[in-house]
Length: 464
Ligand code: UD1
Ligand code: CA
Image 1: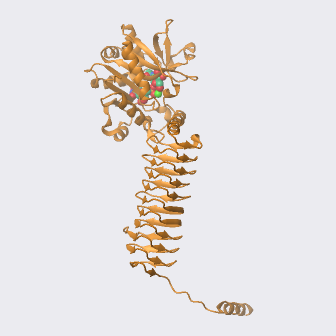
Image 2 (image 1 turned 180 degrees about the horizontal axis):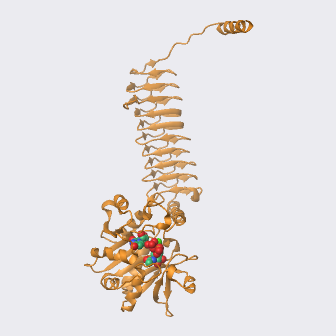
């Protein structure tokens, strides 16, 4: 497999048709900016850092991509051909093939580009453009072939005749150029067309005229070519990318009850025999173990879920959850939480920056913030970790086997020692020693006959 010498990514355009304040390539598909996919693909087909042509809102793109690419700055967007001219200093002194791709085509796979490169090598082409056959070619440049079936030129939609517009084979905007002959034709580009732009597509024609060998490589999967110009395209790309991701997981042994309503970002890892119900959103670097069941409607971000754990209708952010644990419905696990094995986190429980030991139970209506809870602990209904004094957060420690009754406030900083019990309704401000019972609430007093006397009094007042 021969790689290409350099990849040039075109991402300077404004993307006017998106009607957005953001540069087009920073809009997200399945959780990541469009450009992310293109940069990853580029990394797979070339050893050198890709060259990205930026211009409109360049800073935003630079901030996102950082040192992962080299940058060429196109201050005025005079067309795709002009964009490549701007990048020229990065490849004019090298030999071999340069691949040029548009930054707005996130679905192109590296294997497809590799096939195009191989096609160029094997056929000793000086230029190859990637094409695809679409049912609806509207908006794309069309591939014009001569009688022999060879590429004649690419005609943009706006410059095309009625007859040309009926052609269904489109230009994808991914090319492989033999650098040296390419450079001499790039110098001959003009902007004599409907949009007054320097079209990169015209280089193909110029190279042909120059006597270079120019060809077309047709992608097998027309879904890959989608160039995002509008929000409608964005939604289409989202759907196609989602299908691609979901298919991969299903092929690796994950059951998706309804793949059309399961939202998994590209870097998520899922173990086999896990079952995922609709409405789950799995984001970032989330890792789900084997044989888990994700019942409907959870969102998990950068979290690790152990084997055979079950989650239902909950939100889990930047946290780790052990094996055979159950979470939800309606639990909220906030960043920095570390929950052990065989734990039960029930409904309306919020956990933040806290650790929970194995086999503990927090079944309902509880807030655990900035604390560490040991093993085999039971937190009753309505326990509150009072972690904030209005200025600072303090930590609460509940040791192994403690039993905290319902509606208990633990006021930080405080420690509940191993095996201690706390009576329901207590507000705990001091350490509870090992194996002792703490009661911190007003003693109950019953005033016998009080209601009868009160009613009589009221009645008397009414008579007056
Ligand atoms: C381009 C192709 C068209 C192809 C289509 C596929 C040309 C002339 N046309 O059209 O044949 O069918 O892609 O999606 O190339 N860009 C710059 N600087 C510029 C202009 C554009 O960097 O001065 C970048 C854009 O940011 C974008 C990419 O080049 O990422 C493509 O530009 P766009 O305007 O979207 O081209 P299309 O009209 O879609
Ligand atoms: Ca485009």
